[in-house]
Length: 293
Length: 276
Image (tube, rainbow over all chains, first blue to last red; front, side):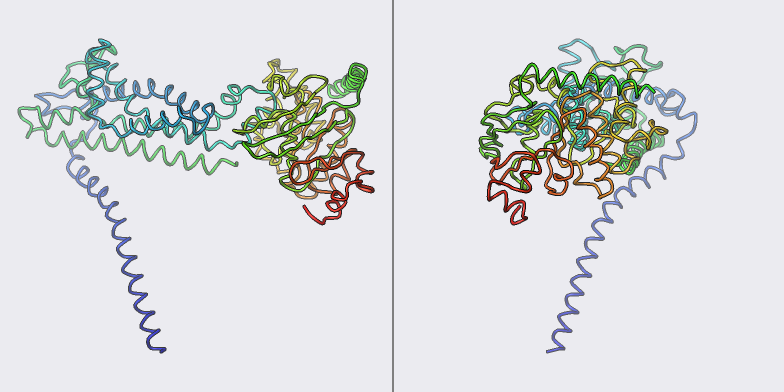
């Protein structure tokens, strides 16, 4: 009798150990994927990176020189995207969380719309941008059209981040403001929005990280294969980091000569996305630790 | 010294306001409900409440949990409108006006509120108290400074915070935060102050301070306090309204009379701690 219990106990222990190992290995795998990407990028791309690489124009059919115009172009596109999308995102989130009757028909319709929007493949955004911004609105292939297309792409990210941040504001702040005779709008802009601001900004940074790496939305709306000077206005085409990598690898007649530069550019892009994400997450953690409600 | 002059001014105006109200409305009541029913969706939480809140002193609203006492308080400044599906039927008059038809934003300037949990804004102590005056368009620095000092005096918090007005309101203890919320409510010069179990999150020492402040405030404005604490009602209130489960007003009168000789046997049971 006792021996049997002892056997049972041992069997249970084995099952425990197996389950634990399987789970541990699975989660290690997902970290391993990231480690693998980092390893390949760093081992093959780090040699290409130098001050000149970051500050010079490409030369000799992109087989020499740097990625400066692509960096500048990506900067313009990303800033344009966030500047055009953030006001809409925050305004929608304020309406959804503060004004709309929760569970109302309109709210549900818009929620489904926002969720669907975030699931739309990015190439579709590129085509929509081409059809609407480039053609219908006549912006041409330009920074403006590309930035607006990217803005559309990150809109759901911004709305969701802002809504979450607004929901995290304690009800007591709103009650306190309204009880003093503040209008709803006054309470939102003086108390609710400032309290939610860190969360909204974190969402915006994550949105920038998303926008900066997207290729398909700017492929038809903004990207130039090669330019000898920086864009002069928002109606100019521009080079951008992700499309630069794509063009070097596919469109270049001497693509094999650009390998090192491809990996270098990819490493720079990866590095920027990681810095943005890590920055946003640590900042959010710090704000959360500091808050006292 | 500014505080003194303001104080003197106020006691003049308060005296005359009360006189004026008595003369014009021929009544000692500031808020009166007539056949007031209240619903959350289909659930009825107040039934047929007829109650007159006296102009002078502190009125306590008591009763077992779920009897609708907090709801009643929230009808007086229409805060219930924040909750979906809530609606009131019947009539409430505030200084002769139909309160349920009035502009809620304007009403809340005259009927202030202090909540169960201290809810200071994540701003400085100064900005918390100055919030109300700023809502109502006061921008001039010296007026704001005077109002903030005066309000903090009245909430008995000035001496503890006068050197740290720029500090975050969250650097204060729970009791201080609650007195800050009282100061914040006073800064818009309301005629009525509603207090919804203001001490339930506080220790006995902080509670005693709030109670003392409440007594002093009653000299200048009407205080309505919801409490489930019999001793507290006995200490701070002049009048008491006892509600029973189901939202029925069972008894209303001077605190002493109700406590010593309640007419309703159910109120006797409640006061004896037999339920609720």
